[in-house]
Length: 533
Image 1 (cartoon, one colour):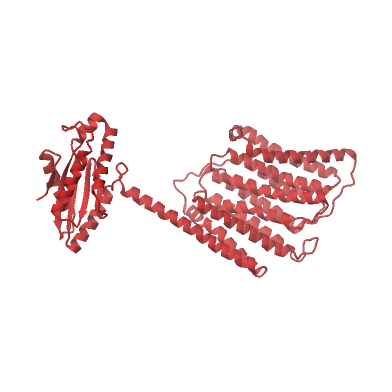
Image 2 (tube, helix red, strand yellow; image 1 turned 90 degrees about the horizontal axis):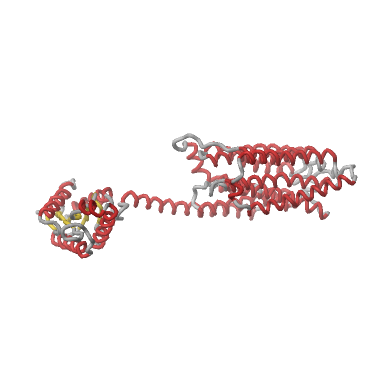
């Protein structure tokens, strides 16, 4: 909403009781300010302890008292109507800011972000009124000056951020989103200042540049309302649906009221009943904040529309910034180009951050899909892929390929006597010993299943494969891990299979040969190594 230009609206009523009433209004403004400062320090548990019934009645009582008070004062009339007007016009958004802040405090951890952003926006709007109030007090009142205009512009920055930046994004990307939103606000302010600065005072509806100024605020308000509605229809969680529904309704109502005011009512006198038009919007927001609690959508998974919104939301900020910067270039070349560069650079940084995180997440998921959670070795899926890869390589090069199958001796007895937690611990210990003997990068160690492990040895001859198998067997035995087995410690049996330059495309023959060798090692008394002939 643009700063307003109106007649003095001074009332003919200057009797003593009205002066007393003015003093009460000033005291109320002080109390409201103290509440705004004090609310952040309230214990969240005390706020959360409010019953739904109390919040419901508070959401109705506060706006009702403000509305009745404003109607009563404006009907009676007071001296210095400009001060009373700015006080009431600041009290309504201030009360709404407190209501939104309290709703955010009552939300689950991490779920109150939208309410806090809306509270900050309303506080900025109330701040613009406070600047005008102080200017009127000091006698240097210019309702069309740029400081209050800046606050009216910054009102949209927190809302733009919360509309465009998804809570599921990584925090570095959200920091960049905040910077783009702030840059957008600064660019918007520079654009409006190029319109306001040349205008003659007072600004009147129909004056040169006024339509452009009012239209720019209409665009800002429409932007907030439309994207709030889009986020509402694409949201599935209860807290997101509740917040965006409130923001959408408020955005539509505020946009209509602000448009009527900026285009048709700028010259109305101070403390006139027309001011209730904007006040009612903020009071409606207080009511909605207290009573709107929507359930989550009953859907198994998000729709295609929801996915499109989620993927496209990050584009809202840079595209808006680019569009506004292009429009600013004819009016302020340096600021327009700076806005374009800022949008491109910041969005590029954001994409890099998200891409790095996506690569890390992909690598993590690949690791989870190919790693045995208990031992940290490769799982059966990774073993099959690695054996196929090395088999094909051996077919092309004619090199040797060996496979070790390793089984923990008497593992069932260990589980029955010492329990499964002890069995899991022994599996991890044996896996560590096997990993320690697989020194080359090309060697792949995996948990084949149960208490059985496998090691792929590419590019080796039978003698080297047998030697490494014996080293592994000794490494496990020398760990002296307690076991109810006949030797009183953990041992392993190992079967080794080897092939030179395989011609067959099927790896099953090599696996079967290693299994056969392991079977022979078991029947040879265990704790030994056997090579398949």
